[in-house]
Structure formats: structure tokens, C-alpha cells
Image (cartoon, rainbow, N blue to C red; front, side, top):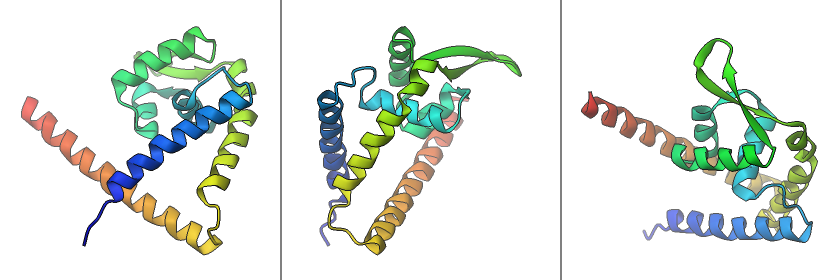
Length: 155
């Protein structure tokens, strides 16, 4: 069997990112880009998260995330705060400016969902979401195992 899901998922991501950016441009929303929107989305769900949690929830590499957070902080979207329970940790907090952008982001997300699932039945959407979630879990488990092995080699 010729399996090409990985390639297809990669293409879906590239095309959907392009469409998302196009929609932002059409709506004259320039306060954030697609990747920054993923960070904001995570923080709209739960604020005051450490960078490691944000990296895990967005799938962004820590090095990429750090530079993006720097730009978002400069743009007045987020601020770094000290964890009151562990001053060595830095948490990320939203600004009022970022909170006001949530309806725009959610509207674009709804539009993207309409594009993704055009012609799909409710059952097909549920099945697709379930399968993608399983693939995501498999990848996270593999990555965690890999990271644990890597840590064991370093110690």
C-alpha cells in the first residue's frame, strides 16, 4: 500500500497557512500572523503558561517560539511575567490588545473550517478529526520517547 499521509498533511499545512495569511491580509488584520495566532489561541484558552507548555501546545520549537514571543512582546500582544510559585520560570500573559483580537481570529478559524470540510458530512468530519487526533497522539508519544532517550544519553 502506498501511504502518503505525511506528505499530504505537510501540503495541507502549507496551503492552509497561505490561505490564513491571505484572509488576514484581506481583512486588514496585521496585528499578528498565522503562527503568532496559534500562540494567541493557546493563551486565549489558558493564560499564564510557561514557554515549554506553549511550545508543546503549538508544536513550535522552543528556539522558534522564543524569537516569536520577542516580536509579539514588542508588538504589545504578550508580556513575560515571573511565576509567583517559581521565580526561575517565566510565564506568558496576554495584553488587552491581544484579548481584543480574539473575535477576529475565531472568525478566520471558522472560515478555515468551512474551507477544510466543504462537502463533508458531520460523520465524516468526526471521523477525520478522530483519525487526525490519533496520528497527533502517536507523533507526540514517539517524540516524547525520543526526547527521553536523548536525555538518557546526555546524562
